[in-house]
Length: 282
Image (cartoon, rainbow, N blue to C red):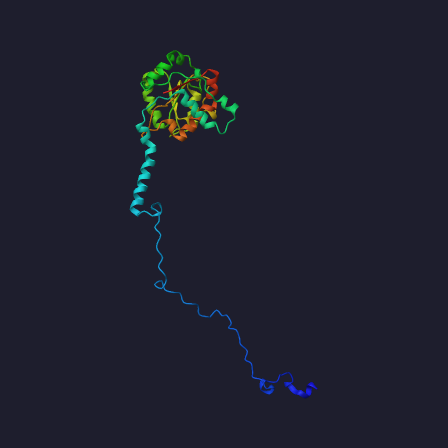
């Protein structure tokens, strides 16, 4: 029967045939990307908002003001380097100053028992320089029997007296200042500048040296390489109170301070505690 109806068997009768008016389908508008967006209102059309006043702390300063504040901060930083030392009255070093430095240097890395072994007793110090002495007069005061001691010294690879300072240049200055004290004793320069450590070891092996002047780093290296022994050492003098062009003492220079304290630990503190070595602060 469906075949008799033909291809149009599925169509419904229209409204005209049924006597009814055709009903139009109302399609909802589809959203599309091409739909024009609502226009933005101009700033002139918008209601004006009152600007809030910012507190003075939040207002940015002018470039000129920034430069001035930066210069002031730089000046303050520079002041802490040399000006403080320049305005402070010079004070002679004391045994307590040296003890305090050793304690501060090792307090975070050593146990309580180890710290006790690093303490320097009072009897290991000779009288410190009160800033009225030259090096020769100071050495004569702490070593009144130097001529007798130096004559009896025959041992190689060791010295009777060590003077420790901050630089090679200062070493040469101190050797000139010692001339009034040394007499017939032999003095040796103990620093690294232009002098190989092998040559210094050979010299100490072949000659008797009474007095050595040098930097803590090179003296420590000679002790560690068995080029310089401590068996004859009687006095250790630290060039404590002298100041360089920047008004720094040897213990104000971090590298020199570190090397000096490490030098003290390489057998010198033990010799002080045994009573065979005396320390002087010049």
